[in-house]
Amino acid sequence: MEDAKSIKNILVKNGFGVTAVCTSGAQALGYADAFHDGIVIAGYRLTDMICVELRESLPASFEMVVMASQRVLTDVSGGGIIGLAMPLKVHELVDTVDMLSQGIVRNRKKRREKPAVRSEKEAAVIAEAKKLLITRNHMTEEEAHRYLQKHSMDNGTGMVETAEMVLALK
Image 1 (tube, helix red, strand yellow):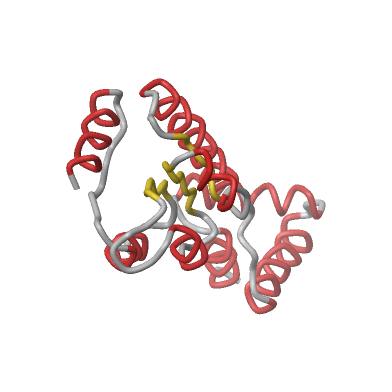
Image 2 (cartoon, helix red, strand yellow; image 1 turned 45 degrees about the vertical axis):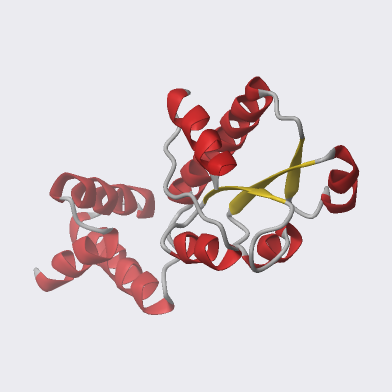
């Protein structure tokens, strides 16, 4: 527990947020359930499991750093575990956590930028609204799509909701 608190202090002093200090895998998994992603830093053996079991139980969006002797790290490296050899060098810990944090931020951005997958019903509503704009306002399909996009952004609504508004004004 003292080592864990020391690691927390190092990370906090270097600008990283630390959610919790845990002594068991069950505690770590409990905290992981509350978040979409993150970094778990552990030793080889926790009170209720070893690091490999914890890694297998964590969601794939979590990164895991294990600090142990070089001999132990050769047995557990790979499989989504990044090893840091003991005795620990502070700059290696900080650089590793920084690298992993940047990767998590990039993955979050990718998830946010991924276009929403619409259901067939939602796609049909948008298509019907476009068809109406094309026939009533003599727009091209591209112009009708852009019209729905622009008005949904201007009004702070989704495209499906904007399409429903267009259809309601028939």
